[in-house]
Image 1 (cartoon, protein in one colour):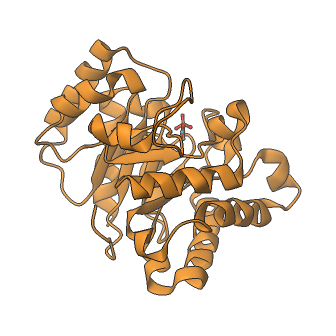
Image 2 (cartoon, protein in one colour):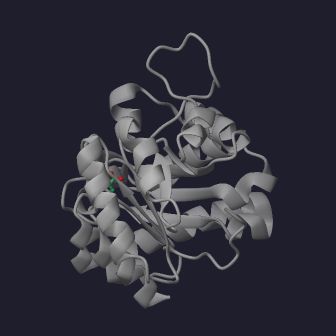
Amino acid sequence: MPDNPARTPFVVGNWKLHHTIAESLALCTELKNQLAAVRGVAIGVAPVFTALSEVARRLEGSPIAVCGQNSFHEERGAFTGEVSASMLADAGCTWVILGHSERRQHFGETDDGVGIRARAALAAGLGVIGCVGETESERDAGATESRIAAQLEGLLSPIDAADLGRLVIAYEPVWAIGTGKTATPGQAQEVHAFIRGRLTARAGAAGAAVRIQYGGSVKPDNARALLAEPDVDGALVGGASLRADSFVAIARAATAVR
Ligand code: PEP
């Protein structure tokens, strides 16, 4: 995962709590075959923990990265139910998604906690996809930027500038996740530009080069317009990543616009 001044689009499928090991292997095999010739886009999949090592083994030799859906900040110890970043790396992951809104909503993750997890994951050698996004009521109250700024502060404060090349931000408006309501390309670009401005103010060129994915009901029919926006560097895809045909179409859309 080198620094990425070219901001190659990164399209990641978040499989959430879906797919057995056998189903995960079937899907990643289809993706490996169908995406073998795709160029100009980086691709990742985030299966459930139990499928990670088998998926990683199946994807060996393919450019598709394997991502964890979460990791804890301690490496090992009496933390029943947690998984550390180094254990994800041991299972074959090169990336981890942190601070997804479902983690924040259902498991009480905080802005500061996400930053601590991100620092630990980077120290373990993983790349981090750090998620930020406002709820519908925050947007309606005109608090989108202040909410995103607070989430970014929590995420970025513990991270060394030298590690920014292994950080990706996923802007995922909570009201668009799994709802079928997508941000318009203009709404997405507005927030992405805000995020890039904060990153640049904090870390100059290294901040400006951080990739910013959009997530929230990305589908084959809306991907192209979203990915064409100048500050949208790929997508974090939930529902549409559970089938090879729709995920492949989104990955292809990313290559078509850059
Ligand atoms: C997600 O889970 O990160 C996501 C964006 O889901 P969906 O594409 O289903 O809205």
